[in-house]
Each structure stands twice: as structure tokens, then as C-alpha cells.
Length: 228
Image 1 (cartoon, one colour):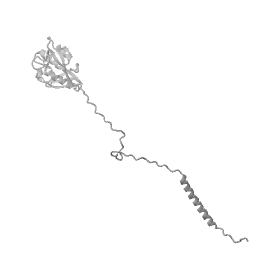
Image 2 (image 1 turned 90 degrees about the vertical axis):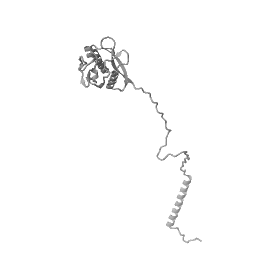
Image 3 (image 1 turned 30 degrees about the vertical axis):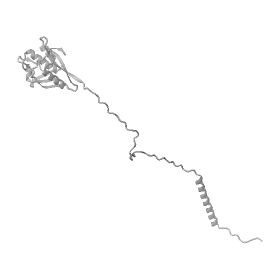
Image 4 (image 1 turned 45 degrees about the vertical axis):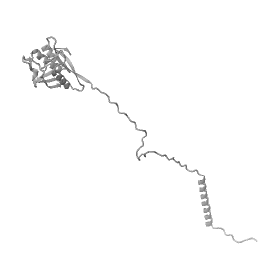
């Protein structure tokens, strides 16, 4: 006998709910499956390093190499170069007024005026070697000396004019002029005594040119040099 009782079919809402549950379950299963087979991200592990000694302060770069010690250079033995000054003495040979030159050592840094002043200081002290003489009185002093573009200015004390005859006067005049022009032989000399230009020298009134040069001494008084 055929069963003709009506069958109850599930409603559309129930069907849709069941489908959603099935899809959700499938998605979860798929996600779990992917996690199990996906490769893991590698993690790098650094070994721990132990540093002995004091730690380097923050912000200070560690030195890349040890400091190099540079020894001090040895002190050089430097000897200052020297220069010479020339002065003139009277020769004791013959009757004519003749001059012999002599040299003294000076510091290299000496100026032209310093050089001549030191030469005159030795000249006023008189000769030390045999065969040399001077006509300059020992009391004579150099009061001033300057080297200018137009020549050399020499100022002597009044003692320069005392004593001796004409030969002595010519000799002392030649000694002063030649010594004053040792650096520049052609330079003229303005000669003064106690600040006044010297025009007549000695009791016999030896006339002195102003300025006077070596050539004047040779032409006017026959002065000659034996060594220069």
C-alpha cells in the first residue's frame, strides 16, 4: 500500500544557513592546512661577544688603530753665518801716506750702520799688529754715524783735530774716509767735528772737502792703499 502522506521539505532559509556553515568549515580547514605546509621565516641568531676592559662611551667612535708616537726631531746645530768689516791703518813703510786694510768679524744680522760703527770702534782702539800705525788721537770718539742714500755721515769728537803735523792730519783723515766707505768705496763722506762740518783740519789749516771721497784723498794728498 503506497504511503501518500505529505513530506516536509526544509525551507530555503535553513538550506542557506547550512551552506554557510559548510563553507566556513571548509575555509578554516584550508587555512589550517596552508599554515602546516607553508615555509617558516628564518630567524638569524647572533652569537654573544664578551668585551674585556672598559666599555666605549656612547657616541664615541672606537679607534681603528693604536696611536703612533712620533719622536721629536733632533736639535740642529746651526751656526750663524758671519760677515766682516774692514778698517784701515797707516803703513810705517816709506814717506808717502799709505793705508793697510784689516778685517774684523761681525754677526751676520749686523746692519750697514752697525758694521761701520763696530769698525770705527776698533779703529779708535788702535792697531794690535806690528807694522800698523794710526794717526787718530786715542781720545777721539765716534759721536754719530749714519748711512744714507747720498753717502755716509760721520761725527767725531774735537780730539780728532789735536796734535801732529800735516802728514798725521792727512793720515787720520784717510783712515776715517776709507773706513767709512768700506762697504761702498765710491760713496762720499760728510765729516763733522762736534756736529760742525769739518773744513780745516789742524793748526796748519789742512783744507777738507765736503763731502770728501777716496778719489779726493788720492788727488789732493797722494794717499794710496797697499792692500784693500
